[in-house]
Image 1 (tube, rainbow, N blue to C red):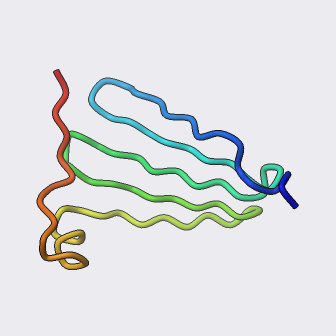
Image 2 (cartoon, rainbow, N blue to C red):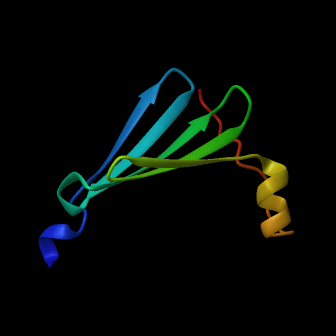
Length: 77
């Protein structure tokens, strides 16, 4: 059963954007979180077998979930 759990998370940085991937279940399940700094949007995608789902979230979306939320923005030097 433990072999189905994810072992690592890989984060890739390209210019002002980043992507974090987790693969589990011997490649059957993959989840990715992509932060686009240009428009402050987060895309969360989930792939199970050959089906892919994605949601795009902005600051307004996060604020509707949690009124105390400030911003998804991050500072890059």
